[in-house]
Image (cartoon, rainbow, N blue to C red; front, side, top):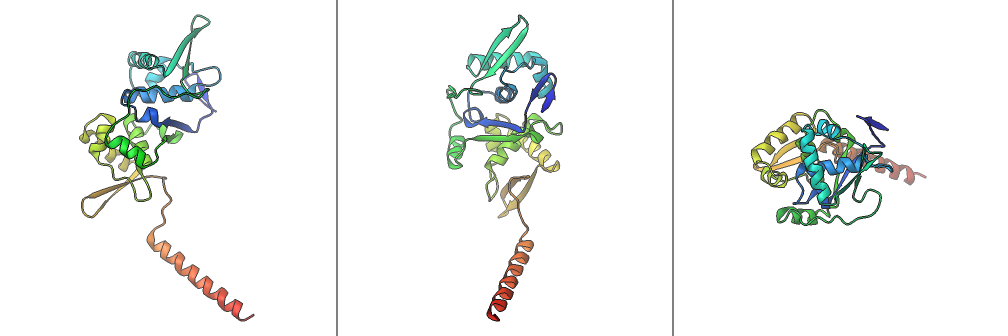
Length: 232
């Protein structure tokens, strides 16, 4: 059980459904605030304060209040007052099924990519979500890279990430370099100009030399078993 700032939860990470992750009507802060409320919403509700959220995301309590009002207006959270002073928040869909009533999804390249990868949402493990080593942008950028990283890797450009998160390509380049320095991703260049990004831990990769050695050992073992069987 994780406990922070008066909040507690059985916690392994956060799940962000595609309707939230790809929404063009929600800002990045509204998305991550919603999923944090969703994570903290137990059977009694979420009791976290604006100051808790402000400290968690590195913004002001006043900004958090504005984001909460926006989420309430879009019917993604409900807010009630109990015992005159206790604020209780509920996240839409946490305890009862709901179809998120968001009016938009990133169009163009974003929607095409989500359809191509059979996209349902992104999972951010607690080691990433709670990491003091990573900024908020680095956390969500890692999540998107991990989501796009298939067996061949992630080929998305800085321009793609910039358009998705609403920041400049240069800004993305800084965060990609930071994730690389911190060991959360690997970056390689293929065919001289094709960048390939792999998220740490997404796929277990065995070096080619070890694969060849294993194949050779397998061949030798089969050969010995064949000879042994022929002598019987």
